Length: 320
Ligand code: KG4
Ligand code: ZN
Image 1 (cartoon, helix red, strand yellow):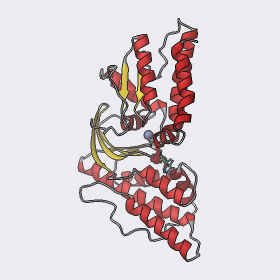
Image 2 (tube, rainbow, N blue to C red):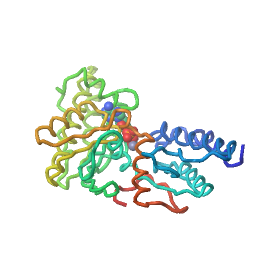
Image 3 (cartoon, rainbow, N blue to C red):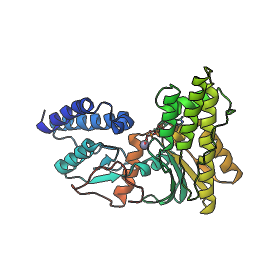
């Protein structure tokens, strides 16, 4: 085994030991591990089979000779791996914006072409984006603090539910009724952005009050309330944006787009307004390599390649 693949293998094993509980690592966990493991295995294969042609680094709609580096959290090791492959094999290095990749999950199975308006709801982002082209995105609104997935995760943790919190809340909500008054805090601000801190405070208060009085509360009902509140806001904001800019196509993406109520309510709202709704298949809602491959294909098609000075960024805006 060559020195480079061996180094990659060691790095892959060591990183979880250095930062086993790091936030970025936890959030990007599975996908990151698979990505680095994939690259490592590929490096090993290359060192063993020098004649192997690397056209399968990503299978992005038939694109060949491309390495896609995914900008997630502190995953510098991913960028370094991609750079190493790009340099060693003299093939293009393509960077992919994580939010754009989530949106691109819709191109995998649907016949949707820009322009359209997209709601990206994930653990790290809640954004309403105007998609004018495969490489043309404009941020219309976002959360001022936690992303919606993060808010779901925090609320779930308060109730002692499993991670991913959004999925747990969604499951439990199906057995409850949204009958607990949740919050009087304003969640939507006049500038069009949204904050979920009032929602978390309301949930904390309900749980603490019940604890202080020695009473129990229904996790099913509380989950149903949180889910409804969140979905109402997201649907309203998305439809406002679609109406305002006259789009007849609406797409949703990100881990939270797996939410059953959100999908139902968006479907209803789009039907009333005679708009087409596009949702990724459930397996492509959360972080996955396929969505990165698709956006990578469009970046490469637009000749958006990067140099060796490419850096990973945890908080890159869709408009940068
Ligand atoms: O897109 P994603 O996999 O990662 C980021 O880019 O952040 O999204 C992960 C988020 C988690 O916060 C998780 O709680 C949420 O997606 N999630 C859900 C559901 N399934 C996963 N939220 C609401 N309802 C679901 N069914
Ligand atoms: Zn994501």
